[in-house]
Image (tube, rainbow, N blue to C red; front, side, top):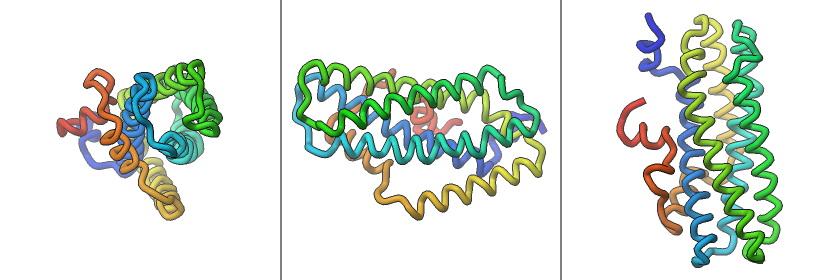
Length: 210
């Protein structure tokens, strides 16, 4: 069975990772919409920015990045994938950049809506950069890493499936609020982004492909 055939077969590990990508794509769209409103001087609701940044920390960093670092990458490397492979190096670099940008936005959230002109510009730049890096990283993972996952040995794939299902269940049990709904709410409040800015995973999901 070739990798393309296996990719269209439901695989819990891919479903887990793709779900994260879809939620983070929605949060990236919300971040773009909020920063566009901030840049335009539009009305902003107190607390929205803090909630959005908290969602990136909780769901992006403490859920998705930890799954990649603690479960996915170690198993792939133990199964023979080179730790120095370009895609793995790029993903480590992307996580480092994203965590730094979340740190920057968290610091700004302490002064929410008290920002001066320079701060507003810096926040918009950081927010747009975070969203762009996430979209590029998610697309690369789905293009380069997902095929590696589905071609794992059956016992290794079964182990990864089980580990990710347990991780997700524990994370869902502790989570307060729905980050996907938060993204939808903020998009409804601040407007949508353009089609060119929309995350690849969101567009594929909407079209029923991938």
